[in-house]
Image (cartoon, rainbow, N blue to C red):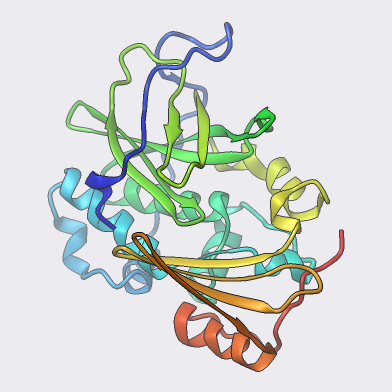
Length: 280
């Protein structure tokens, strides 16, 4: 994906009087991957081992984010198998690296933040509220990454369901950022860095609440370059595979066998049987 061309608007947005005028490090996360874990991550996202010794700069940041975005799907299949999302490091690495599955924002950005720290970036998680037609949603309903290096601050997100951003921001006097994508999706970040464990309650809510968007239907999406492939299914409907490339979009319905084969061929996910949207 050409992150430079993403037309997201980032600006200072004072959200609450309790936020400090500058980025507040509530609990800085210094956790990094072991050598074996990092090599497993590089294999998973199809990056060479020399990424470990590359200069810590914007080029490396974009390269790692783009690689993960194109290799690890955004998906909620386990939620509809009644397996709630876990945000521990062990659970995320077992699922996304060893079982070669995808995940939702906490898993995807949690994994990326840890990989970025391992190669030398200061990568910290910040909460966000997704904007709905009724206004901002629940606090910590989403997570993004604030990345620091060479005196610069960047906002990174590869866990928003296809929309993604790697963008330099001014952290001098902000209470958060208003992030807007060309798709119309948007969210408001806060300005407090948090450990991944702080998002456990919201991960559970997204996995179990009938009010959460992840429980309303199945989605599996992967973005490579300008092309986004999305496999989706709503209750009492067929699976559908949609492919978008800029303004072009095609879609076709799939039966169960076709959908299971597409999961394996297009998204690298191999399951013994195809899940159906669950009732919550």
